Image (cartoon, rainbow, N blue to C red; front, side, top):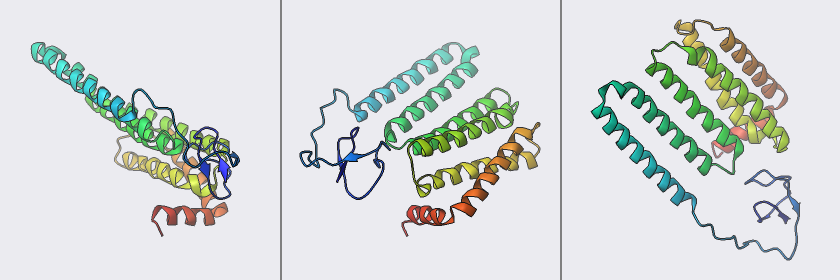
Length: 220
């Protein structure tokens, strides 16, 4: 048995890091039980999300009333309401997946990309989102995923799936280029090239880990 000093639980098997928080495990202690007593929190995560959801509803109601009274502010208020929804979703993701850093990063990436694209649409669709912002976000995510996996000493099969998901999102930019929607495709092409090189390295040097990750995701 090994103990996680952060989660204060005992882990069976020979693992290097805690499957919950990715912190390095310590040798087991016979005096530590498998089911430790956690201090009671004043506000649970469920209560916190209920309060946050009420605040979102109140904000939408109040801003809708303002837009009803002052029609000239409707466009600005609509953007503020969309931003509030995405902030709520962002906090929900962090709260729900707080013990899985890579999953949090991946889902947060989708939320942010969707937010910037919708913001671009509502501000005249100048395509700055797919030209500059999306490639920058995906490049930062690729670096962050590699750094987190290295720092947490994760096995390849524990983070390959997230890299592959990010690669598919990066490759989707080729669709915008083919449709002529990306007026300056160089950042997107550079990013797609980097992801393809990384995928080639993963397939060549970590083919066994890739098969393990696929089997785990498909419950084979």
